[in-house]
Structures are given as C-alpha cells and as structure tokens.
Length: 294
Ligand SMILES: [Zn+2]
Image (cartoon, rainbow, N blue to C red; front, side):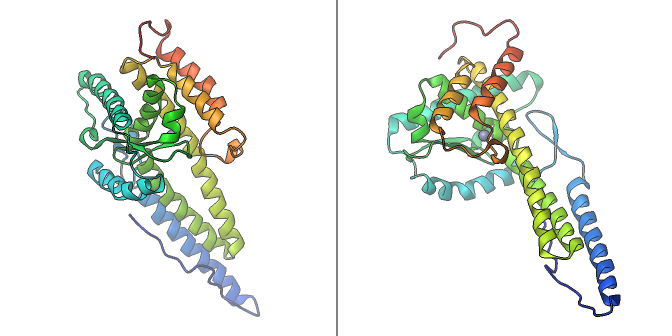
C-alpha cells in the first residue's frame, strides 16, 4: 500500500504578490507530481484477472492470500461489534450448511471452464448474536456474517441462501480490494486538488468529490452482488425469487430509518426488487423451473 504525504495547508505569504505567484507555481508542480504518482500506482500495471469471473480488475492487494489475511485481521473486531458468535448451535450449523451449499454449487459451475474458487478453503459463515441490527456483510477473502436480527426476520431457507449468496458475491468479485485501490486513487487525486487549491476549502471540496465517486461504485457493487445472490441460490437448488423476499424483509426492517438513497451505499430495497426481477428474467428466459427449494 502506498501513502502520500503532502504539506497540508502550507502557504507562502507574500506582500508584493511575487512569492505568492511562485507559491502557486510550486503548488501546481507538487499537485502534478502527486497526480502522476497516483495514476501510475493505479494504472501503471495491467489489471489482475479475477480467477472466478476472468474479468480484469484494479486491486490494492494482488495476492488472494493477502486478502484472506486482511479479512482475518478484522474478524474479531467485527464479531465483537455485533455481539460475538451466536451461541445457538442449530442456527449456527444451518448458516454454515447453506453457505457450503452455495460454494459447492459455485465449484460445479466453475469446473467445466477450468476455473476454481481461490477463496474456497478460507470461506467461513458466521451467525452473530446481535438481535437489534439487521445486517449481513463480508470481509475480503471470505469471512461472511449475518446478524441474528436479520436471520430471525428471514422467512425461508432460500432467503438465507439469497443473503449469503449476495455476500459471497462481494468476496469473489473482490469488491473490498477494488474499493481499497480506488480509495488510494481518489485520496491521491484529492490530495493533489487540495495542494493545487492551496486552501482548506478546496481540499475539503476535493475530498467530498472523492467520496461521492466512491459511493457510486458502492451501489454498483451491491447490484453486482445481487446478481450473484440470484445466480447462486438457483445453482444451489433454491428458488431465485427468494431474493425478492429478502428485499421485502430488508425494506420492512429499514422502514423510516433509511438514509436518502443517493447518499446511501446500499440502494433502497424497494428499488432493487425491479432490478432483481429483471435479473431473474434474464437468467431464466423460459421462466424459473419448478421444484426448487423455497
Ligand atoms: Zn452488499
């Protein structure tokens, strides 16, 4: 990881405007150097090929093993924040079983193409004891969590598969890793903007723009993960329409507390329903087959 330090808010005072002018020139040169350095760090090597999707990606950590380590470092902190592992062995085992079913289905789908899941042995599905916070999340490298509050709200096992499938999507698409690379890119450009502007106000503006750009990517990640939620549930033998039920559950849970959509990294569940319906129609042009688990 690269970090850029720059003299924040450093100003050259000048009564006659001379030194001030050379100060501006200096700031622009420094800003240009930072921009160049940042762009070379981000674009200076070819993208990494995603071992599962085959897509080219810009990531901060190139080795999957490093991603796994990074995720493992954050596990304890995340678990503690949501009440630790749930003590109910039956529910805990169910979460792990459904997660495993999704991974097996993924393996089967990758095999014919000669691909494999590089995170296969590091995936871990944990039910957290928090009964108040409706949430599920994944850390880079395969640590997947669902809170008891969300688990208890779900009506079917297919919905549980949908939630876990969405989180598996974040892991295999390396979303966290991509966001870290972008964070470095935007921070670098924002730093350059701040230096060029030379006052705290432009530094703040540049920061705000950087954050907005990252939020946009956050929403795209969610939609991409919804796609995996639909795909993996169906591949594991569950009715993919379970994902619509998941959105309805989330919508009820967030009633009246949802932040304005544009500034939220998670699109409104109600708006995701239409998108998920389209996904299902695309994956199953002849209709969803019968006999799937609910
Ligand atoms: Zn998500």
